[in-house]
Length: 306
Length: 301
Image (cartoon, rainbow over all chains, first blue to last red; front, side, top):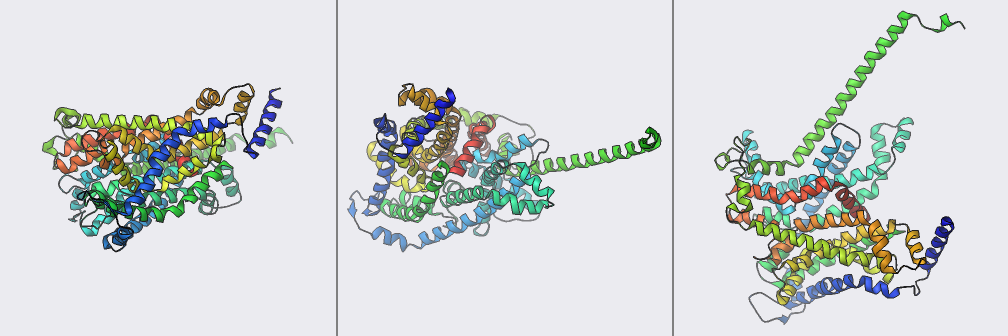
């Protein structure tokens, strides 16, 4: 009885999926979606449209008069050396950080993909950094690298190295290390979950066929988790491109503008220089560069649904 | 085929047994050694990854007089810095904690209210063919700083600047894509038969959503709530821009402390440790939801 009912239900579901005509409760779709629609219209679409509007206006904190300036703000941004400098720094930083984190995260995932004593607690300890706020990690990093009370300078001094960690030469590596310490665990978590999701038998079969551990890893395991690796790489890259918190708290973009990311550049234009028009224009440029990547993200979910 | 020829002599037998026994223990011992060396390496790695936090805990327990010995553990551990951070020294941190708590809780509530029905409508009722829901996932890519400027101007004109409500709205914007990814994948995994059966029995869409979908979806809802709370608690950029005195969250308060009270290292450390307790608690007590949420969020979105 219940089996026939279930199969009948499946048929009717398949039928209704094929034709999107009126269903019992097509008004329910509107009602249920209305809270989201209100939010999207009120905040999301408003922000996008208003952001573009601002980018076409001369609008500063000090000058109450708002005037239309056409594309002059864009010209200002594109002619600004600091904008290109921050863009270049952001891209370099993001590529380096992402590559290191992927390599270390995968290595760590493979390393954890076995049983050993204390694994549960050590797994937890390894993913712990992900949960700490970037702004707070930055404060903690300031504590550990402070030249008076920090452990890192103290250790370096024991080895006879007396370098200033925040000098132009060493500040970038410092930021890279910080991000790697903070987010390698994220890559690890994703990779490890991916490794767990395919059956041990595949590995066993390859071992029986005489494959070495190295071959199994390179020829079987890594190709199998390719989608997971792609997702982790994509997310880490996108997130480092948008980096603001950590670097702003740790260096404020300095010394000078040496560690200014695009986000920090836009922030300073808007909230330190008070020039909303120029900041919005830079934001629109950043948005435009990232837009082509959106279908990549949305299609992935569509695929998962099918 | 006699019993005598088949069975080994007693001497042979003991010989075989003893060699296999020592072989076995040696192999077992070697295996145990290998396992424990894996553990040792894992301990080292997790120690290095958590060094910033462990260092902050160490500094927070040191009396001020011991601060200039960075590599030492506190000889006479003190909780004075924690008392200071919690209000004894007259800082505003209790207020900041309360703000962070209200902002995070409000964001969780708003996120669930707007995404759960909408995801159900988009994926099950085929509202707008699910396009409204899926296109929002694209927001995951957009830089927060782009939204910060128009939202700042909007809030300035509507009086939402420096309010908890304003920060709830901003955090909702940030957490929308992840919540939708998790809910969509959760709803897609639900067997449609139950809902269809309920519909055949005459239940309305709202009743099905409330009485069937939401209870079955509970683990996903918890994952959404945990991650939304965590990310709202950890948010910094919007907190920095949209708050000044009334709604300052703890991340902004702690970062400002560095510049304004730079040398009170003990209090600062205690403060960062305290602000990390909530996220760390999630990691320990809600690990399952955190792990599943982050993995699904990364792989499906």
